[in-house]
Image (cartoon, rainbow, N blue to C red; front, side, top):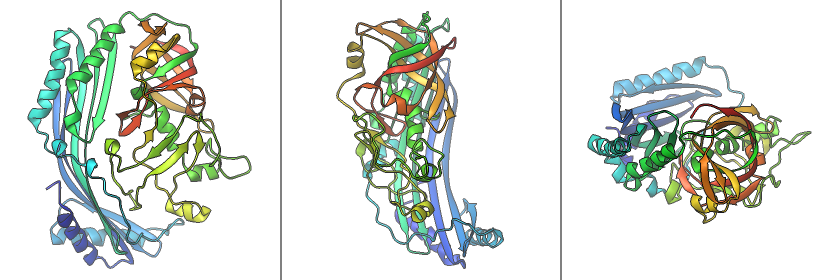
Amino acid sequence: MAILSQDEAQAILKKVISFSTADECEVTLNGETGGNVRSARNSISTSGAVDNVSLVVESRFGKRSGVATCNEFDDATLRRCVQRAEEIARLAPESPEYMPLLGPQQYSAAPQAFAKSTAGITPDYRAQQVGASMKICDEKKLSSAAFLNDEAGFVAKRNSKGLEAYQQITNLEFSITVRTPDGTGSGYATADYNDSSKFDAAALTRTAADKAAMSRNAKALEPGKYTVILEPAALVANSDASLLQALMGALDARNADEGRSFLSKKGGGNKKGEKLFDERVTIYSDPTMPEVATLTFSGDGRPQKKTTWIEKGVVKNLYTSRFWAQKAGIPDLPRPSGWVMEGGTQSLQDMIKGTAKGILVTRLWYIRPVDPQTLLYTGLTRDGTFYIENGKIKHPVKNFRFNESPIIMLNNLEAIGKPVRVGGNLVPPLKIRDFTFTSLSDAV
C-alpha cells in the first residue's frame, strides 16, 4: 500500500477533511517502501525493509492547533484521528506566530524525482550490488563496511482552504569504508541517486579500496595552514554536519535579523545584497533539475521554486518562515531541500596535477560548531588524507583536526572542479589556500 496514486491519496485526504469540525484543517499523507543492507568485514550483517503509510492531521480553532497521526485508514480510525487532533487543539495555547493555512498553490513538475528503476529494487538487487563490492575487497585482502539504502515514496497534502499537493520521489544512497588488514590504511566513497540505473557499487568500492591501500603508513606533518583539495564528500555529508551544509543552513533571515548569524548587521538588519564570498561562488536550488530533482513543495505547502541564494559571491536571498516574512516584509522563501554549487570543468585529478604543494582530503567528520557569528567549525579528516607535491600524490599523511569557517574558506578559493551529486546536492571539489589544521589525530 506504500505508494498510493494521486487519486487514491487525495480520496483519503478528502474524506478526512469531511470529518473535520475545526476552523481550519490540513492533512498530510506520507508513504514509503524500500530496503537496506549493511555489511561489515566483507559479510552482510543486517538487512531490512520498510513499507508504511502514515497520516498527519492538524486541526485549528482560531490560533490554537493540535496534531494527531494514524496509519490505518478505515472510516472509524480516520474519524478518531480527526477528533483527537481537535481535542488537542482546544487544549493548546494560542500561537503568537499563527499564520492561516495556505490556499490553492501552483507547483512545478519534477518527473525526474521518481525513477521506476529505484522503485523496483528487490532484495536480490541489493545482495548483488553489495556482493560485488565485498568480492573486490576479498580479492584485495581488504576489509569493508558498507550501507546501501533505497526508498520510493510519495507525499500528499490537502487542506480546508483548497490547497492540494502530490508527488512521488525515489532515492538510493550508498557509502563504504575500506580498511587494510593492519588497520593503518582507510578509504571511503559515497554516492546517491534518484535513478538506481546510475549506481555501481563495485566502482565506488574500487575508489575506496585504492585509497585504503594508498593511505597505509601515513607520515606526520606539522599542523598549520595548508593549501587543500576538498573532495565533494568532504564538503557535504549524507548524515553528519558539513561545512557547506552549515553555510546553507545559516541563510536564515530571522536569525540574521535578530543578530544571531554571520549575516547579522551591527545595529540591526542583515547582509543580504552584500558580496561576502569569492566571485566564483554561485549556489542555487532547483527541485526540477534532473540531477538533483526533489519535492517541489515544502512541509507547509509553499512551492519550492528555482532560487539563487549566492550569485558571484553576493548573498541574493534568505529563507524564512511565513510568519517572519510577513512581519519583516521580505520575500517568502522556504528552505531548500537540495542545492547546486556551480563549478568548472576540472576533474579531481586535474586539480591535483595543478597543485605544487597541498593536501588532498577525502572526508571530514565529527564536525561541530564553535562560533555561529563567524560560522567557525571544528572537525577531523579521515579515510584518506594525502600530501601532494609537484602535481602528484607523494604519500599519505596523518589525519588532522581543523578549525575553519566556510565564509573564510570560500574567500580563499584557488580552483573549483566539476560538480558531482553528494547528499542530494551538486557539489564541486574545491581547492582552498590557507586551510587551518590545528593538531594531529592518530585515527585513520
